[in-house]
Length: 193
Image (cartoon, rainbow, N blue to C red; front, side, top):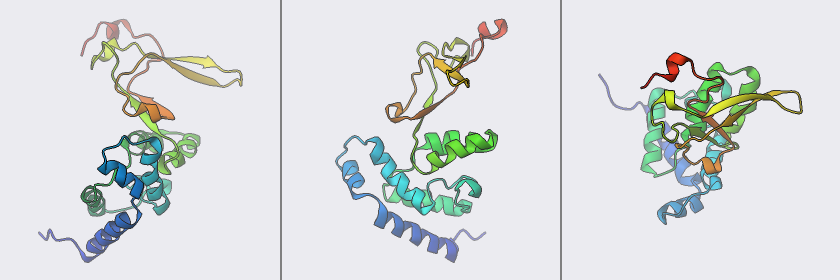
């Protein structure tokens, strides 16, 4: 078995290395070195540079802006990001919610959400655990209530509290592990995890 990188992979590594060296924002690098808190714009500054290059969502299907890289190229990309101590694109939108949208979403949802996620325009956060619930899904109290807005469209209003919401202070949108739309069944209400 030959474990050496091919000539194409070596050329790709050089391209990635050079791109990061020439394009990683100097102001972002300075903040990282000084251990300063990063703002939403700091995170998005690099994300948007990668989006312009077409590299912000390597694992996505090509039709939605993915790179069509081989597994080896994805590995090289990750390795070069780490070597350069460059921020990765935050996973909440690109890695966590986008695959659900491009796999199961309607065409309208894909068109609405995927470009903003890919291009670093809209920030997503996750909402997981709740106070007093831990990993006990039967104890969750957060719920989604359907209502009709003045425009005649139906929406869900999420009521409750989530405690695991990494970087939610920057978020435009959130996705939740659980926000039931109806009361739990008697069987589920008495279940424990």
